[in-house]
Image 1: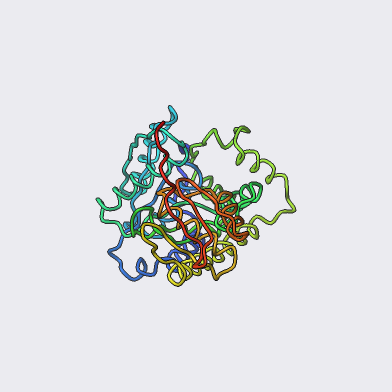
Image 2 (image 1 turned 135 degrees about the horizontal axis):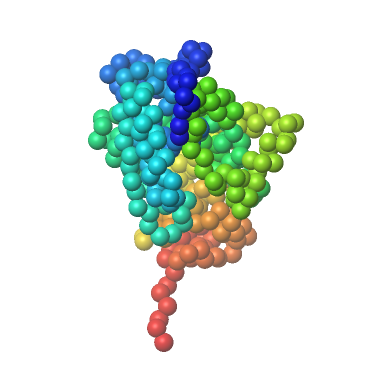
Length: 330
């Protein structure tokens, strides 16, 4: 990440900083009302997060801090973190680099877990009020289209919510750029004369998202903002289904010795969520959606079925779920 010799103005245009400020005020009213509260920014060094840094530093001088998580997956990552630190120094924004070590397993899932664990620790240590990330409308649209292509259900299609919590904590997690396009954010960075870091995976056609992004760039008929808004509507639908599933659980699931009995009353979409929770609670693992759907179909047809280490049976009282008998060693 560098800057031109002319040293352009780092602060974005006033209308852009006002736009960010208005969105943050909507998502997190406490920030506008409590001047001592500070906001943490996750800044990787890529164009989106650098734009967030520039906008927030200009909108809230002295009230933001930034952190860069170094996963150590690429040789350039340490240099990129150092570049972010130098930019933060120019902006008078405190910065921390958070190195993490990844365990074996699903690399993307492990990187996400480690990233949020590190950011949560940093937020607590610095006494910050919330964390903001740079997810934007193009991210929303790409994720929705990728999951549609994989036949995901409502939970999978639900877009990222503008406000949630940092995983494993009660700390607000804010995404104030969900109404912004990738091009708008790139323009903010370019106007400041900054060359942001570029993740080579974004151009690697081995990755589904990279291929989709290339295709979308040529699909001028597609309204990305509208697709992203649909993802937000699906997030609302997902929240409604989850609320109904919690109510179904309270009213229709009962303890039966070491197992559980479920007398379903709700439509299929809600019953599937209740079944998934039953399996997770009794077996300790969250099952895949396809397995839950097959379990549901078997029970509706009054057939016993197994899933994981559980046996499910239709009974006069409802559907019973118990641990499968242990096999005897021969």
